[in-house]
Each structure stands twice: as structure tokens, then as C-alpha cells.
Length: 199
Image (cartoon, rainbow, N blue to C red; front, side, top):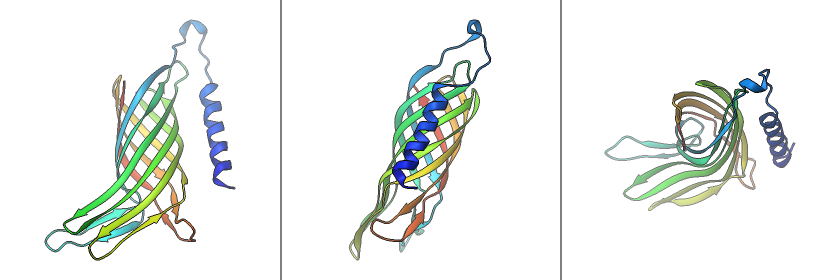
């Protein structure tokens, strides 16, 4: 099954559930869903090691395929009576190492859609399409760039609502990256702590 077909199937399923949430409430007790802007940040860890950078007078550092910082912008539909919410966001996810003789980084652009069930405590499931994953190193002794194919993964996320506009939670993404024009792949699966703000 190719990436376009899998992506279309997942999107269709998510939109159908979001558009037709099950509810047994009467019209007089229904609460309408509300749409907000969404700011998102997450600290993540996991996945295969991509680059190990050794320092003379400091601990070595490693760039992981699942690290390190994710920043996102999108929108969220907060649940009404149905208890079903929806989030869509575009994010920048990166890990990097800086040294006196150069630097290295791994970056990608995840586009995510998740369905959430619950209110103050809630659980979400969805998909994450990672665009343009790129590993790059530029040191005095060596440099290069490795590009990966766009990759489709799955996400599970738990949120706790600290206030009507602030949420903290845990998330896990399951994903693999295939090197362009190669049979080589790396595991980019990762877990993390997430914070979201609705505005």
C-alpha cells in the first residue's frame, strides 16, 4: 500500500468520525464544539542514533531520529456534548549539535491530525506526515547531507487540561524514515512531553 493511499484512507476516517460524533444527548442539553487557534511544543526523545559528536572537554552528544524539540501551529476543535475533539497542526521538529568546528542537525516538518476523546483528561489518536526529513553535517573534517522520503506515522497522545486554554500531556509517535534512493531506513519513533495553548 503506497503512502498516498494510506494517507487518504487515514484522513477520510478521521474526518468522518469528527463530522459524525456519536451522542445520546437531547437537543436541549447539547453543548456546541468550539474552534481555537493552537500553539504546541514538545520535548521528544527516542529513535535510532544518527550522528555522534565527540568533544574533548565535554560529554559527547548524539542526534537521534526522534529528537528533540517540536514547535507547532494549527487549530483545535474543543469537544462539546459529544466529547470528541479534533486537532490539526503543522510543526517543525529538529535536533541539533553545535561545536567550535561545525554543526549537525536533523529536521523535518510534521503535519498532524488527531481525534481526542474526553474533556479534562483525554486521549487522542491520529496520523503524522513528516515532510522533507533531512540530516545535515558541516564540520571541518567532514560534511554531507542525507535526505529521507516523506514518511507517514501514527500518534497517540494523552492530555490533561490545566485550564480552559492550557494543556499538558504525553505523546508517542511510531514512524520510520527511508533514505532517498536507498534500501536503508531508520527508526524515528519517539516519546515526549507536550504543552498546548489554545487562543
